[in-house]
Amino acid sequence: MTANVTFGAESISANPTIPTVSPLPAYSPRFNRVKPVIAVVAENHFTELTDYVIPYGVLSESGVAQVFAIATEQGPIRTFPALQVEAQTTLAEFDAQFSEGADYVVVPAVARNKDPELLKWINGQAQKGATMVGVCDGAWVLAHAGLLDGHKAVGHWFSFKHLEKKFPKTEWIRNTRYIADGNVITTTGVTAAIPVCVALVEAIAGQAQAASLAQRLGISNWDAAHQSQDFQLKVNDIFTAIANGLSFWTHEEIGIPIDSGVDEIALSLIADAYSRTLRSKAFSLSASKQPVITKHGLVILPDRIEGKGKAVNRTLKLRNTDPPVSSFNATLEEIEQQYGSNTAAFIALQLEYPRRGLGHAK
View 1 (cartoon, rainbow, N blue to C red):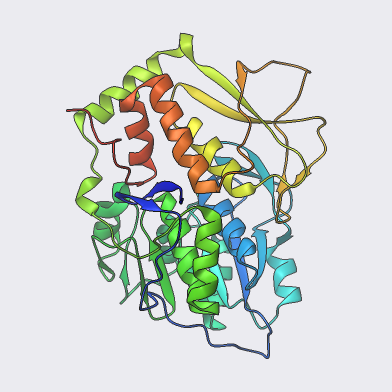
View 2: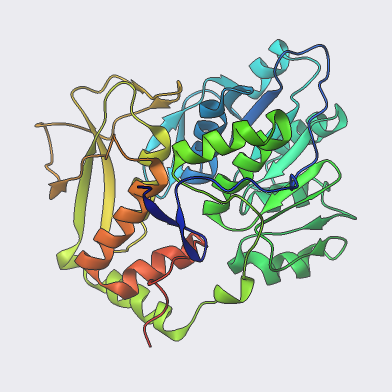
């Protein structure tokens, strides 16, 4: 008996259905590398949590590439809307180690999307032949770098009209979750990071590797099918945001215990979801302030020490035996039970995550 999980608009089996055609160009080995080098880059002041952590975690889990979490500078990375992480290396250190450049560069949404140092580095990587992958509002960074001029691209639904107006040299495409045009790949909203990374694994190592990874993640379909018209800010969403924001007396602080080997994919998805309700905020809890190393070597800086200082309202343990996407779907169901269907739908809207049963209330 197979488990049913939800990814995209349909309830689907966790046994992957292998697509007949890879949606991304096949990887061509360079520089006699046994595995491609993938750099997932953050901007320290403000980087989207799941845009950064999910690609790092998913691509590391695949085992088909050398994956590095890097940042513009040393020190903590402030990730939105929750947690703090620390990169493995900086832009300069990465360049010193890989002077020929990365094969792929994954660019998440960052607040300082015109940061001169970041744009210079990204352009340098592109000139060295790297394929650029803009996740969600990472499209802004690539566009400011001039790398989307003359290309087809997609972006987060909320930014779409702004991107069209700001960057008319780019052909902005609707109704596709991700798109590859030349050496540039872009995606729609936050959760598109999961299928595009599985598609990237397929491009690097083939369908069987991608299908195996998809099953471990808890998804069965990583194609680019998407309905852009399903994601629009409506009156009900605005009302939900205002009502939740004003309900400060019921605001919850939720602690997520973490220790060495924690699954960074599940952690980021669940912390992100609970921190978008406007009625709750997720914090990582650990036995000490010592950095916690995740399953694939990312550094999490604990927010609080268990049993010391300000207590959280409740704790939420990760489902370590469940695939990350299954855990995420269960989390959305819990949020629906606790805060109502409008709040759960509001989260799915922010993440551009199609879910059956979490549409707007009629």
